[in-house]
Image (cartoon, rainbow, N blue to C red; front, side, top):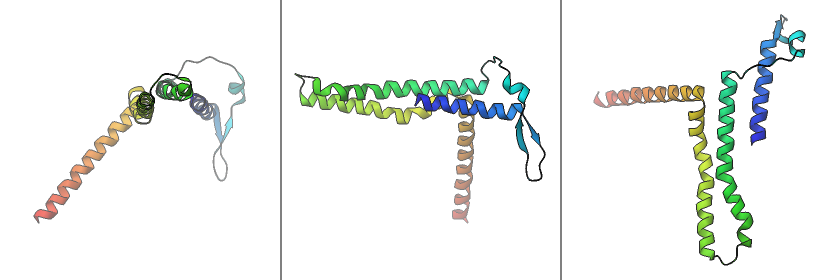
Length: 148
């Protein structure tokens, strides 16, 4: 998962470099980006942009959440056969608790994205306001049709 997130960030950076370092050459059908040779070969250090920082925090939150929720269950499943002197009911209970803990990852990722990414949070609030506004319009329209 960490590798997939790192690959996603690398792809975004590469596509951003292609867009910012390229120029467009007019064509009969479309504009084709042409890389700027002088700027693409030079090495330069740059600080993380706001979008890169946001993606990094999202990736970090996702990876930490995945590790803390998935590793305990899988470790227990690997060592449970080696545990001697433990009642089978106790092992079943521990397995159930760890399985619930493991399932938390799938519901918690959304909240971490909201906490870690201002852009994601803004878009979510905008969509929520739009949904509430549309629900109010739909409700008032239905109420008016019933009255008439």
